[in-house]
Length: 404
Image (cartoon, rainbow, N blue to C red; front, side, top):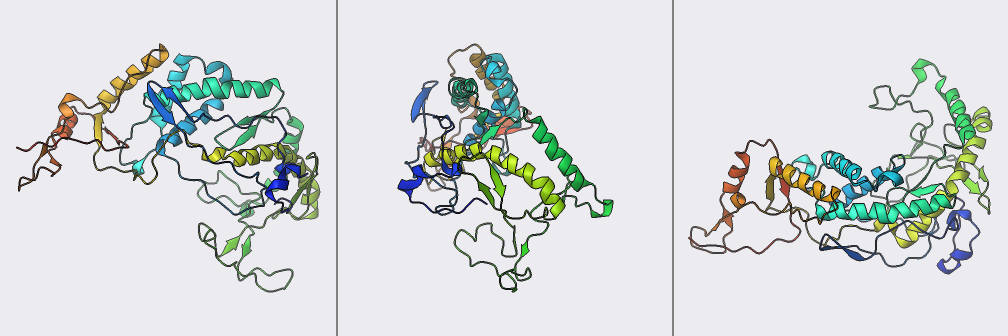
């Protein structure tokens, strides 16, 4: 854990701790503007209000708001592209970009428990993610590289750094870890469910605090679980607790000292071997921590590419169905338009003539009765397609009822 400080909001900019100072370069993570037009439709973004500059040990725990399914697959695609080798050179190739989109559409994570295949990558999604990667992330990352900065944004609110150049430190860590692997076969702690493919060497769950059993060094009495709070009751154990380790960073951010023992690395031999290596590695993380904290200030983790109305339930009883065959035709047409840099006008939600529903009155002649026949399902299914795409509208359209 980090050194404990408590500083008022207005004093934080003067704080000496490198963990809470942001001065690597002037820009934060790239982010969208409030709104702009894509393919003739407006995409909106929610921007959080300004917040005080955070210190990692100040304030109360908080949880990010839930994100939509659409937001999830757009984020995953953006991150996957930016993790590709030489992506800044490749991303402007529309033909290659379309290939990535095809792969992403096939690999989109399931929604609704996997019971329905849900529409992904409509025309606005394609236009938006291409614009974000080519006109926002690409110049941003190229600007960092020109400055000699090795840090780059990953998924929203996360930063990464390529350490390939520090081969000596990497080999030091590998050689040290080898000493932990050289234990008798019967004492190897294989991770549960890994089929002996993942070996736990240093894991906080191996020797944690066990409430009501582990003795306190101060009192000699069994440690009791802390009193529950509203937040503690969400995902916190009343039986176990990991033991933290204290890392102290120098005021200039160039040196780290481990101030307490690390659980499972407590012997004198392990301390002399591992601690200097881990201190060097942690020091390299300090700029990453700085950028994450700076992003927290403006709420990067809560930025939304997809605007959703608060309070709307995500499921609908009325589903728009499209056969695999028709989806493929529309998807191919959309990607052809994209590759040719044409106007994107493919509408996946456009109902086909044979799929229209008829609304009848109920038995007592009530025109407000919304029963309907299943002719659209039969027409779609008789094509022989094994799967049906089911699309949900955000706003339920008003439909005309006919009385027969």
